[in-house]
Length: 258
Image (cartoon, rainbow, N blue to C red):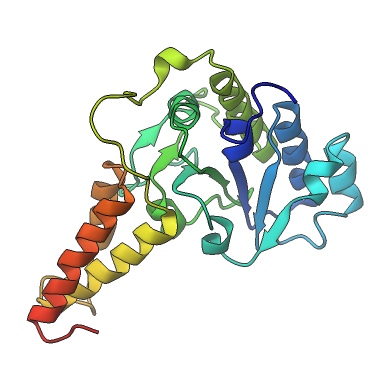
């Protein structure tokens, strides 16, 4: 076994998620991009193409990466795709008003490789429409690939290749100096999963409605702003539990505790 491919290595931990992909050929191309850099965990969310794991175009574009292509999982929702992940990164050339913190591929790869308990996912959207705001707002960071501002369009497999390349370098230690972690300094708890954080947001929203701070019929942009705020903190499981405990007490004080 390659010494870099231990169970705790980024090669085993990193997941690539494709959302509503339209062309089967692009699924095959992404599988090839992943395998050339040593990654294999591929999940498709509600693909718009028929039988993308066996389509002749997908098989042709995958070339020698049929094991990655046909080992991919197809799910119906982003929640299913991120099951088991505790760090989600949306990939987009388009910045949003309420996006989570914006990172480069190198920042993401250094953080993902340098944090051993991280189960990260890279999420890439539809070829034409990209990722919906709802998914971007659920993510911990938004990855923007630095490109020519006059022509920044990368196709799906090109973006996947850039990301996989940076992650391979980081996993092999070439970018260790860029690590965002500080090993041995202070207490580091277990990173909260995407599902745990989403549950916290739902609980917090209920509490804010209960005390009249949030108007459920006219919420405006309060929750996206709060999501952006918390995305900057890299929430840990215990911190999510504390926030849910606060929400629970708020609900109890208003007589609306479930």
